[in-house]
Length: 208
Image 1 (spheres, helix red, strand yellow):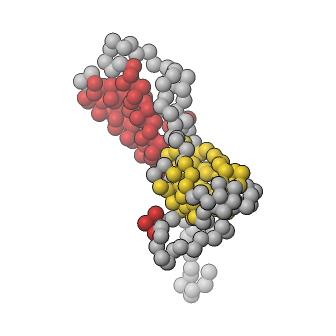
Image 2: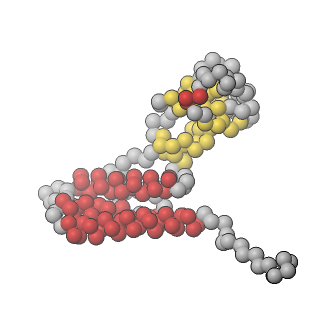
Image 3: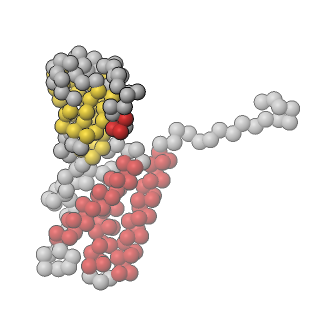
């Protein structure tokens, strides 16, 4: 975490600063994820068990990115598509193929269809976005792209200013934080654009 010397006898105290830095990190990460930026992606593998359709999700999961299932071996996998859980047991949607698997999220579990018919070592591959643990130590990092780390202390400074009754100062820091999020969003959007619009000029006779 950013090195900040804050006495526990002052307002804001160290506990609040750490809490606010973590909140800012979560708000920034949420904005990135809303833009389809998959940071902190992890891969986990688990064994398929015959006649078992439910498998536990990782405790630190924030978002599922991709699911692959190998019903015969871990090297012969197929991408699973997410299905609407409300469609489960619908009479028109009861046939599933191992070559076109489906999955649904049931609480803290993932349900596979079709249900595995045999045991397969590492037959289930799950890519997911990790929900990072709160920063607590002086050397902890945000896990965000380094270009956006500067947003965290702006948010914490705003909350700290509010705590001390400096509302105008707090509003200024919060405005900088929100503007920084908007600038980040535009940078991500522009970075993901392949190229500019193409303009085709035609003459009055219709030729190119």
